[in-house]
Length: 199
Ligand SMILES: O=C(O)CCC(=O)C(=O)O
Ligand SMILES: [Fe+2]
Image 1 (cartoon, rainbow, N blue to C red):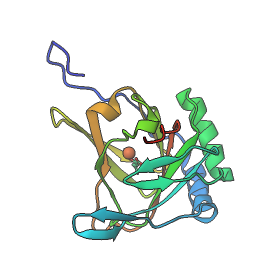
Image 2 (cartoon, rainbow, N blue to C red):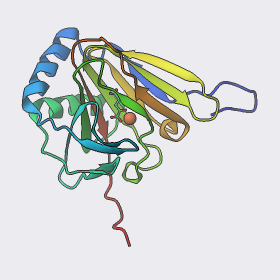
Image 3 (tube, protein in one colour):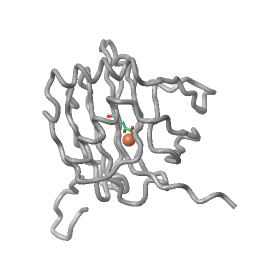
């Protein structure tokens, strides 16, 4: 928050650049390519229906349903590598996660636009643990009011944790990097509660 002394806003982010060793990260990356059921979602845009610029998967405890960009994500059961990484992340973050969104960026052409993880099932101050494997990509954070920017180079094996009011006050993205080759897999662990039924 901006305070009365004019200090710049600070995102509540914990950053562990060497959370996994390079070897551990490489082993996890190739295991995830094989064990996860990757899907290509479609999104409605002003220009028509388009493929999402990345592959995704959603795993979690039974009932951990998550709706974003109009896509209803029923969780698949935890696969072994994802579950092992989740347990490690829970220890580091002192938090419990019941689900994970996996994002697979096939090259620098894949991306994720500016957004905040503000869906109602996440609650107002979610802890979101983001693990990166593979080719490093830049993660930008932009403050909603001041436009202040912070950037992290999300190297393989790193862990970035967003907490507190980060989702209320900031947006984040993974920008395209034209010409960049090589894959990156990102796992964002979350705790979701069931949405109230409409009506
Ligand atoms: O790929 C990343 O590091 C960002 C993922 C993300 O923001 C999300 O899944 O909500
Ligand atoms: Fe996000």
